[in-house]
Image (cartoon, rainbow, N blue to C red; front, side):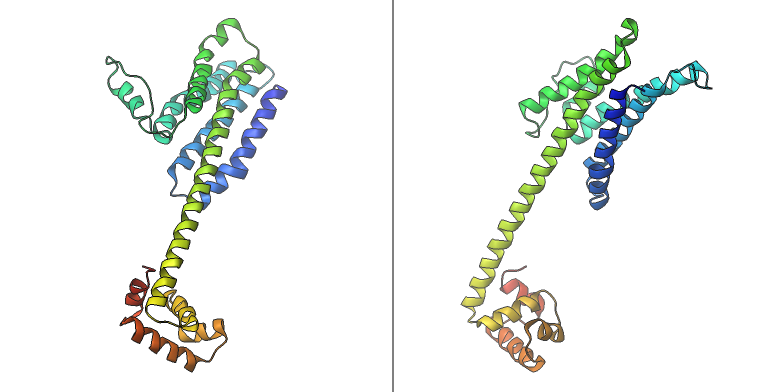
Length: 251
């Protein structure tokens, strides 16, 4: 195995073990992470088999070695269009597969990709198309590995960057929503005439805490909590905790 192939396999294995796999295990409902995980596994398999085979020094028939090496290439080449279709939502790619004779450009149906990302995507496709001429010119292993992997490495970095950006945007949206919800809650408590202590008790009631738990949290007697709770329901007009949540704007 060429040293460049070895380094690329190490980088991709690190990306798989320390980012993609942990992220998928924490969010198994995110199917795009699963498709990306499979892509990395197939890419690593391809690099390992192409780096090791064919080698006449192995106690394995050369024809079998070629079958393994090019079989991994076939798996990777077959899976890549599916990956693009599922993860990048390229509906027109499906159109190509179902209606070969009708002309259509492979453009994303949404704004998921920027122009730069589209160029990277096309560059990755071109690098794999170039695989067909490598055997004819007997290109050395390091050139083949570099050409076929550089596009995927950039694509992986691009997808990881986009994932991080999306997570940050989601966290910012949640923080903004929680802030707006808290302001609405405080305003409703003020309008209902709740005191500061009653507001604190109301928050814990809406979270589902029992009187004993609220007493330990606020360091006040259980009897006092019961009195505050009576006043809260009286002032808000709520009959139970569900109505209280709705009236105070936490529902």
